[in-house]
Image 1 (cartoon, rainbow over the protein chains, first blue to last red):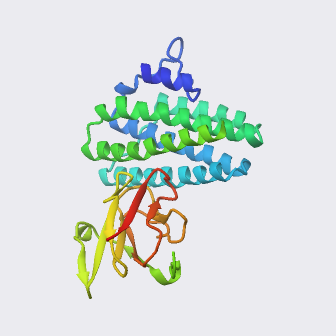
Image 2: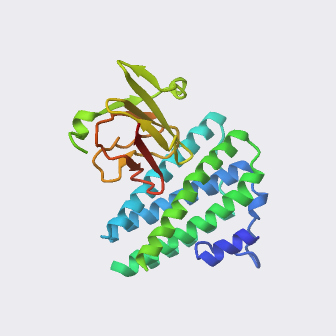
Image 3: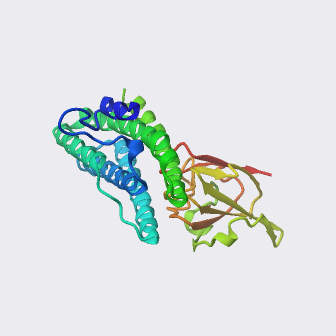
Length: 176
Length: 113
């Protein structure tokens, strides 16, 4: 629950935990649902990066965005290869849909920004997004993944995404 | 830096094989051949003692692509995809400190022996 709150506070997901829509707890997701969330989360960051490349002239922002595309694409390719090897298919779920919906809103918002305002918003979101997703992966997903190969892939991905978090933190500091 | 050009000193070796990954430094014509593996977003070893004419092969064992790039960008392996490798030849006076252009927190050093 705390991880979901972290995402909410980061402004990247609008999980509706009460009322008509009752989302699952991350710990309740099975391996194939977790794989789907991770794949979607990777693709969301790739979309943010493409937006940054379309709008920003800041060399640091552009280099970071290119790294996000390069790394998240590489991780997703490994994930697809592993799923193919296992003869499995990632399963869509409420968390994936919630992440996508909120990413769409954020992209709409950031699309209206230009110059330093965009750079600051993009960098801050990258930091918040990586903090929230890394927390989710480390504390909710990895302890609950059953397949050893899937778990190993998540551990390798987490190491990469923690580096992104550190890089984003540096970028935010530089833009202050 | 002196006499160091990317074209003359860098030999891109293409895809590597896992069996070669743990090969120790080897001597050839009196010059050592070293290997630096990139694992878990770290250069291993991150500090290497080298002499002119030694060669250093960088091999990427991570999912993410990496580079080994001189801190002043005077030499560069280029992009190393997973399991790809590139070899540089050490020259006198070359820039020792290096990093990954994609992940600037990743740093290493080639120390003169």
